Length: 405
Ligand code: PGA
Image (tube, rainbow, N blue to C red; front, side):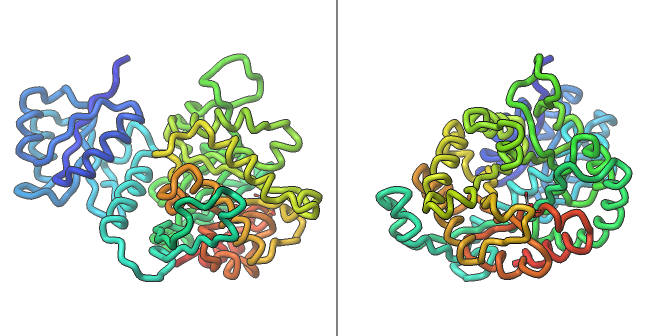
């Protein structure tokens, strides 16, 4: 089957370029137009040739909805996504037509990212804050290079629930019904991802429906298909509407022999498929006591991201999870978490300084409603990966609230 033809209409050329490339990576054959008039002309010549039209409400000359109306007159079954700036609002009657359920949220993120960087102001709020990368954190990672200067970054907070092997399908549904209406308001400023067991993914996706809450898996195999009993591929997750995947969690590394070599294939695979990879790294207690924390982080970050092209590094989410703090109630102090995360950021900076400003790095390890605010208040910590405290809506909501800028 050939690629799906998509007509992309927007008057901002950079957006067209960025989004066009992104959509091509998702498997679309993109036809870009900078005005409704040009788009209509193209459409008239082949009204049934486009599987999807993606446009913005505010086009010069003719609005996006008026343009779609004219297109629908020629092809009543046309599928379309109409964005209206940020936050992205999928028109409810179009939602069911979406070929890739994760697309609207991914597009929202792209559009938001672009608009924020276009209007980046040097203020010190958490959404557009100065990020200090200290010499101490970069000196071990590299001979400093671009990290000698202060840099600005704009990183939207992200809070992810890692349910691990908890919650049956029915329990997942119960959680979501209670959680979603209360979380919705937070999603205007915080990205929330619920990483559920495979058996509950469909339920989480379906209950999340039009809410801006994303669903994540907790593992994924790097191959498309094959004789890998018990494993699940990116395509299988995407088909369900899953948008993110936790990779390299320490429990998978420890109990299921997850290796850096496998992760070096999984992370780019997830990106290529359009899934948001949440890559976990972190040291054991013995390694910390032996002064080996930075060596371990360097080894994991360098190996696991080795095959990710620089342009896509900002799309990876990294979770720093000291193994001694996971499920133990023994949280890293905010200073310890900040130092390790600044170091991880510097490691990304060794590949590309701009990517290091953009990449989101979370802290994980006994985060709860009581300690979240202080941890998330650290300048390099962009969110949290939450295990135990994500199992109850109340505590997970409190953590998400603490992540608000
Ligand atoms: P925890 O788990 O919050 O229960 O410590 C965190 C994790 O393993 O991701």
